Amino acid sequence: MFSSPLNLWNVLSRTGIKYAQTDREKRELIDLNRGLVILLSIQTLSLTSHLINGLHRSALMTAVFITGLLLIRLLIWKGHVNVAKISGIVLINYNTISMAVFLGDHTHIIDFLLLTALLPLYFFEIKDRKLIFWGIAISIIPFGLYHFLSPYLENYGVSLSEQLIINKSTEPVKFFCMAAMLYLIYHKNVRYEKEVTEKEMQLVNQKKLYEHLLEQIPIDIVTFDKDLKYSYINSAAINDPQMRNWLIGKTNADYFKERGLDMNLAVERDKILHEALKKETLVQIEEKLTDRQGKLRHTLKGASPIYNEQRELLFLVGYSIDITEMKEADRKLKEYARELEKKNTDLKHFVYATSHDLKSPLRNITSYLQLLTRRNADKLDEDSMSMIAQAINSVKHLNQLIYDIYQYSIADHNDKPTELTNLNNVLEEVIKNVSDVIFEKKGLVQYSNLPKVQVAPSHMNMLLTNLVGNALKYNKSSHPHVKIGCEENDKEYVLSVADNGIGISEIYTKQIFEIFKRLHAPSEYEGTGVGLAICNKIAENYGGKMWVESEQGKGSVFYFTLSKKAVEPKRFIETFDNIAKAS
Ligand code: ADP
Image (cartoon, rainbow, N blue to C red; front, side, top):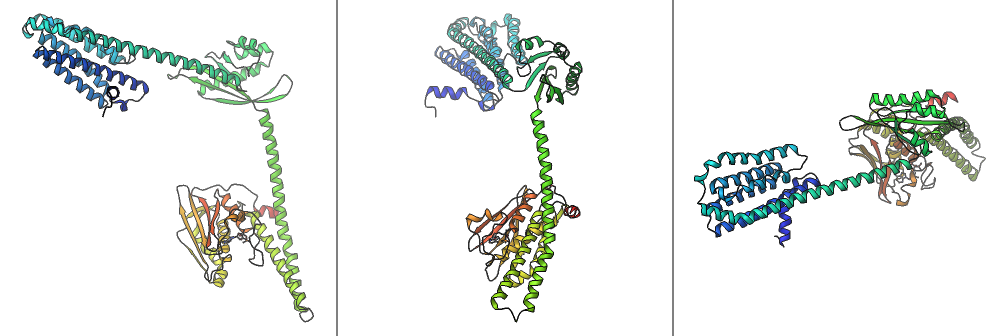
């Protein structure tokens, strides 16, 4: 198990280490373990020597002592480190005094007490005052006891000759113990000293780093003492080093007076400091100031009090950030946003007006073309009739396109309030909408356990009508089968619309969500390429996303997510009624 004595030493030194919380506790535990192992080794040697010399009583007492030391190691092993330390001191001291009593005064065992009085210094951290106190108290009591009892002890000791042998044979042990103990205490002190020096160095370096950072940051940073006098000023706040030095220990009023600035501003600045002190937290204000070049500058000023652990005020940190450019950018952004909003509204007016105004001329074109065919059926040849039929189809397609573009433009209108919508009910309506197609294609649309979500029902109707419509349209199966399902995770519902249709090649699975993107000619499948763009827009408007998984020739599954939490639809766009009124 232990490949070398060094390995054994390491294992013994690390007993109970898993209970130590900090690195310091770990190191202390290792020292403690080492101390105990040294003590145990010395005592085992001493036991052997007693046995060789035939000193039975002394051997028995040393054996008891060794047992006690082993119990202390057991306590450490179980993580009761402080109990082990106190027990260690009790054991060592009271073993020593009982040896003095039962072996005799001339053994000079009591000398050990002098030695072991040092133990608390080694066992406990200096800052652990309570334990140091108890350790010393426990160490002193045996002295008192011994001096009180010594006149009556003669009868309990072994014979004088044996006492002298014991004294002689324990001499090297005492020497070793003293040397080991002093070394351990020395070692501990050296380690503390090293730690303190390292910590000091760390602090110095940290201070340097912070000072460097404070000098590099292009923000005015200052600190004030409790009397609101400047205690630190970085060079961004005041560039002139002489002025910086002068200002240390001065107040805002001193500074404004020196520079001949508006004294009211000094009062305003002090107000922030007073307020931060009163509220015991960060206080910020925006300040307008004309700089030396006569330009108006906007600044954001803040003050924050810093306290120590006892909630005593240490100092106040003040900062000032020039936000003139930010303000300007913000103003421009708002202006652009307003312009964009206006253009957007114009565009919507245009879409509405176009779709509205084009309806009747297109209807007229279709009607006249149909009238033309009917009235001249006997005069027109086959070619002319086919041309007119194509013209009627084109007008129909144009009509559909205009309608779809209009639907796309209003897909994110949040005029309709959201409500807790049962998607099962929405789907029932959708099936009604497409019932002709289902009947015609001998199709089957199935759905189960759809959730209730906070949405506008009309948006969900539009989305699902498009997806179910596509699933039936792009389907050559003799029995088109559409399945609508739902899975959920912590945050959202994942709805799916699966079909056994023609499928989509992998390279197009992203493109089909773009407006006007079609994969088929109108002669093959009618359509405008707007439906999926509408679906995507609606899903995104509710904070969701949309994607498709498909295999050509086997079918597709369209997915979209809806948040479980009510999501405010992304944009507020003028209501359809408003646009209608405006136009
Ligand atoms: P439209 O159906 O009017 O062409 P869409 O935006 O709804 O427009 O669909 C875009 C394209 O995506 C379609 O032209 C079609 O090629 C493909 N597509 C959509 N849904 C399906 C589906 N369920 N199966 C196969 N292809 C589909």
